[in-house]
Length: 571
Image 1 (cartoon, one colour):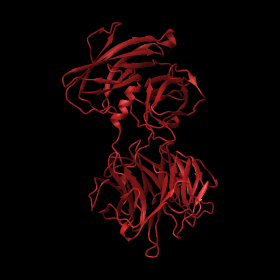
Image 2 (cartoon, helix red, strand yellow):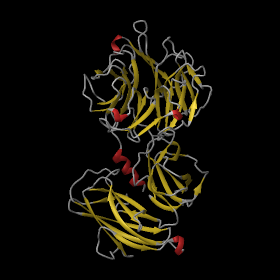
Image 3 (cartoon, helix red, strand yellow):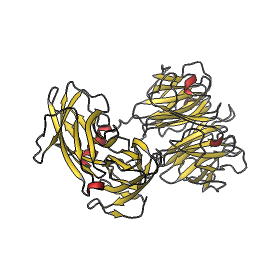
Image 4 (cartoon, helix red, strand yellow):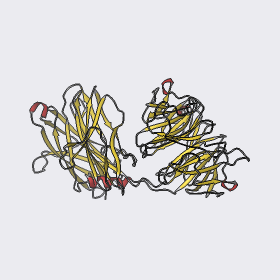
């Protein structure tokens, strides 16, 4: 399993783009500099945004796909450009139209772990979320809006990928509201920080999950106040960085790799030029900046927002798997599964834990376990450090409190110095159903030739095979095994139940029906074994996250009572 996870991670690792600082200037230009630029340095390139709008408001970067997102608050749009754009590029695509819900969009963030764009809207105070590939008059995936949200005049946004939270500074009430990343509708924030006790103003915001800190620009002086990440109410700041000009700061960006804060000084015409200032992350008081980018040659004109392109990824990267990948239990009964998290990076991963995405009526806890014996160790919901190149093992326990149909539950696996593990359905998700009473509960494990969860098909027209073993820990019943693919793969699959020697009991077909005893009523879990034969009808590119074959055991009512999957490739 460990070898298979490392292979999967290598296969989906994103490419690294150039290492640059991008500045969005309100008057329709983007100026691009080397990451450490200072003095009166000219940009390495500068380009104009073509379009009917007059004011650009927010910028975000998707390094993996080489894209740049820009909001225009006057024509209510998000334009997507290549990161390396120059001169006056045409956008790759534009999100614009009445169904989008965009209304004077301002700041935005890109959620790399979930491939989504998160946008603040000022005209109808809201947060709208879009698929990265959205175009045209695409409706949002989610909308946070309404009286309960506390949104009045949202002005700045930060995404905490480690704790799955959205941090929004709201100038209408001089507060910072924090929402669950997956929140939708008229929901209250999970906590509220009165960042400016005088109630004057708040502006740019950033979060540092690795050090547990929240940075917000506040007050008449537009200073930078740093709070504990989970601060609420009128909590005092840990430290305050005082600007050296009357204009103060207008936006803040955390450079976690260089351990620096990058701040914008908007300037005030010819009297005070705009500047980009870099400070040590822990700077306070009237500390001098480490460097200042300012002057006529810089091309800075009413700078509004900042982004970093191609920042090296954290030195520590995680991969995760869940086994078994499917359970079906009655309301009030607990379903368990084991999780392995591997640190494939070069440094230790700190406080690595598991958080479920909100999905429905169930309670979820986890324990660390012994990787050798699966015995529980430690307290519930206690994260652990994972040394470089090592693995940690966990058990998750899910207890439905109401009936619900099978749902593929996703989790956030991460630590304080890592990004969350990308979601791979069938690898690190958990297909769960809550039934009104006991049901068959088929636990399935796959065995492939390479013991890596990948079935190799030798070529077009050729056939690869793998084996499956199941155990029914629910009640006795009849289940039908069928298959489906996650990406319309050009493959044909035939199945058969096998004997102790691995020989088919009947001619392979597209489905197999099995009557299987259950542990809950028969006293002993019934077992069965199968063989699956995969034939490719044409070639396809291997992507273990999507070129997957899913096996499903369904009861007489067509409800999934067990499942597993393998990746498919043509070597």
